[in-house]
Length: 180
Image (cartoon, rainbow, N blue to C red; front, side, top):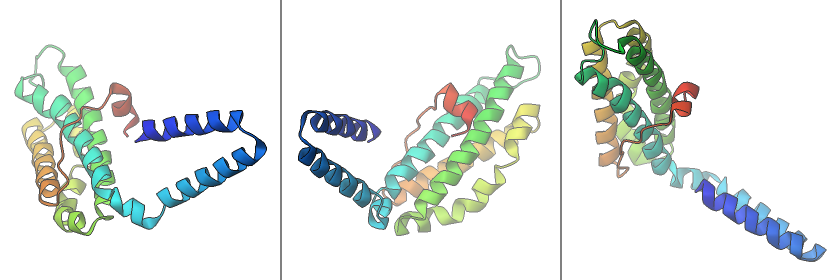
């Protein structure tokens, strides 16, 4: 969607540079009316499911890639090669997951069906808050890993039941370190 907006903006800029002053004025009016309609309340609610699926997908991808998968591979066990680095990445992924799940919950509030489906999961999402610190320290790894996995699966199921299919999307390293 961002690519389409940028492409439209580039095309609009190109046509206004070639046209007369009256052409640029009408192009500017068209541009401002298009951007005004994109921020209306109806549009925000229309894209609530899409935003929810994107944020939940990033959370699911981070959880699977940097928490569940390394745990199952034994990378968190004492003495495992690269354990410290795996735990640090898992801690970052935990914080990232918490952040994206909170964003997904806010998105769900824009859609009545999604808000009913995701509403019961808010307590589970809130319980993840301190778990990223436990991951970084290597404390209670089995319980922490299953907590993240359970919450992600619950969010995926809620999205599916509300018509917002959530698929894993592994975030980039820069997204992970930024937290969003």
